[in-house]
Length: 166
Image (cartoon, rainbow, N blue to C red; front, side):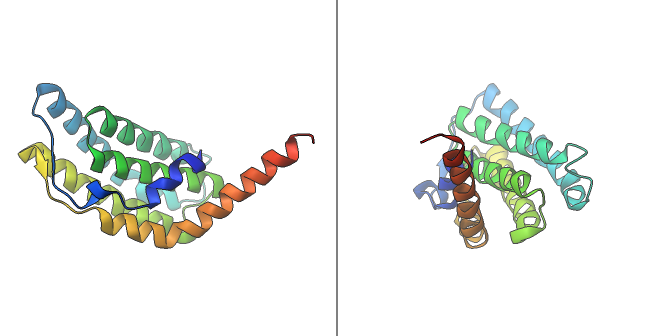
């Protein structure tokens, strides 16, 4: 899983360019749903630091909410939303594997990312276009997460290799 998400740590050309979506009732409904999803996530982010959060299913909820965002970003053909969603999936899956958001500033990054996503969505909701540069959050996530995510990937590759008989 992490292997397929690691490319989210790379800056994409669309991160810094203007993005315009074709207006439609479906687009408006999806953007409104995504805004509601970001508000929901921002409501439970502080709880992810709770020692019982994983037990209570919040880690899985955060991951599924992130998957929802990246999926709908692809459906509406928004590269910025898809990229932020994919990066959110990477953070939440990494936290599930580590069983904590406390390491590598993951809680901070997740909150920062969701607030940036919310800005992009609000821009798209009102203007159907956005000039918001998301490369800052992508680069910050890469600084904090590239090494630990690579380490997790290597760990899982080794486990997989050990399970397969020679």
